[in-house]
Image (cartoon, rainbow, N blue to C red; front, side):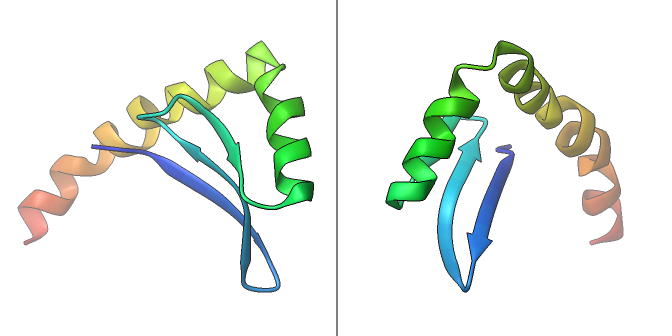
Length: 67
């Protein structure tokens, strides 16, 4: 299971957080600057890493029983 949060503007992906990578990755100049700033914030990183357990692992059983 992987948690991914992507930030888009005008159909262009700017930044993505992936729980398997464990940090933000930027895809544009603006996204790279945001990713660098967000990766320097330990509370934001720990919050995003916890989202896998909070969101994904909490709801995975619902998806499997509905199928």
